[in-house]
Image (cartoon, rainbow, N blue to C red; front, side, top):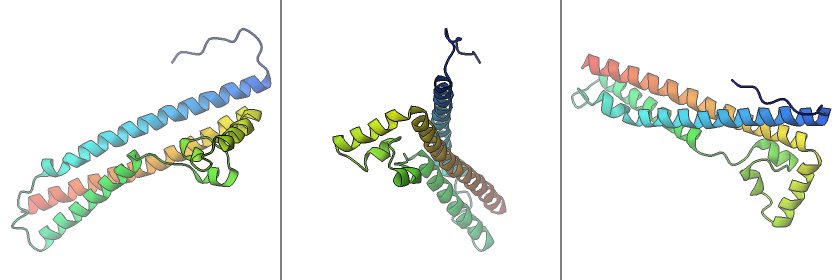
Length: 171
């Protein structure tokens, strides 16, 4: 990791605060991009799971084996659904609905007039560090939701694979 170049002059407290807020936001955005990549890769792999597992013994399955196949299929569907939720874009946060600030593209949809957006941008410009930290909070909230979906989807796919393998072995 390389450190940023030293500043040529002594920064004021406001400049230092803004610098830290910008770095926090940059890090959260980078993590958001990595989460999207992870979810996309898991989704691609999860979609191939039925092909990899195959349908050996499925047509003649009965009783407990059939139940295992059914539960494996349900777990697979749940995993795919959760990963799709992680990949889909989020259109805002609950905070934006309460405060009226604009920090994310979904927030701009609430007040779609140019005058309304100009007023919100002017408001943000009066306190840029607060705006950066609000945006950092929003991105972090979205990131946490994405990782919740990713974890749930991953565990559902792992369960589906295990159950399908068990059903195939019983056949």
